[in-house]
Length: 160
Image (tube, rainbow, N blue to C red; front, side, top):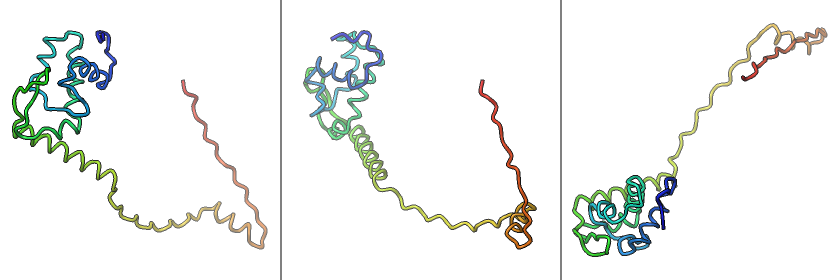
């Protein structure tokens, strides 16, 4: 699988490439914490992905909710071959839990909108008593005076 000209590839496509090449490390259905600095190992073994593509693929993988849920303090991290390569620190576990909580709170706020205050009824403005208005009102009067008004036209300039 060649990705040398994959400039427009989505993170999901890039991730599929990584999971095909290293299935022991990249499993979307059961993700396990990756070794810190795994990007250097990938870079040493694979020159097909650009730095930006590799960064986007790893970012997409490590921000998945399933991956973050597996980051428990003391859990084993794995290398590209699926072998243990370090432990998840307390700080990493706390950061992952905070990200998950923030996502859940954001989803809840989208699902249950805050109650809106009912807008206050604005008083109706009084109609302006202009000469035309007075004349129209007098047209209905028994005197029979009718006043015609001409409507103004507004012209738009043509767009160039």
